[in-house]
Length: 250
Image (cartoon, rainbow, N blue to C red; front, side, top):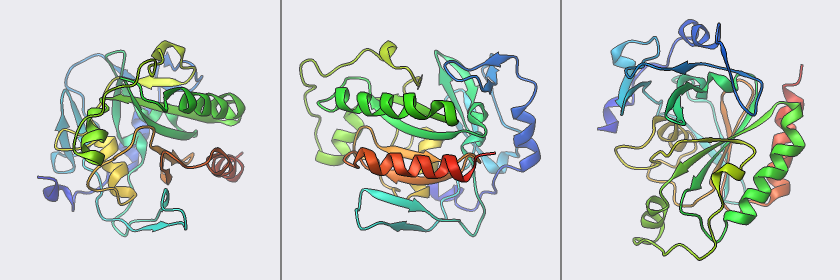
């Protein structure tokens, strides 16, 4: 039960930094260093009391105690500091082409995390255009996109109670993406990927993510900053990205 994880302590800073160093693998397209794992049982250096199992990986338990504030537009949510401390996205692992990967790969980058339906949708083309625009214009300043494939049935059921039929021509080949695309995950429910459990709790989306291409903006320290709904205008997302890039620039 998720309620059993509420008081779990966050991963300690020393154990986090051990993960970020001495990697021999480089990320593509980013030049940031990654840590790939080849063994099946992977765990961060934390006690069993502060972790839980997801598939082949062990993850730190997310912190569910948080406060959020919403802008006049309900599609934009600002994260607030939790009194119980912070998790960062570097605490988590994901898979890329079936290889385990520490998200410390994105250390010191401003990151936009987005859920991409593998079946495609009527928004696929326009959303990929938006993501490529942001990536191409700001990657040189330390901006990255982390796209996670998922089954659109999840958000359809959460939003409508039934599964919508994929539109003809709505798919776009994943190989066309210029940004990083991770293997398929679950966003909601008991088997949700721990990163998305954490992001949902951080922005008060405890029940479910209900749309494709929901976006989570993370600062250079790995701390979730803002959440954007599907219909958030490009200029709003772009301004927030520029704000974080300037705020944290060396």
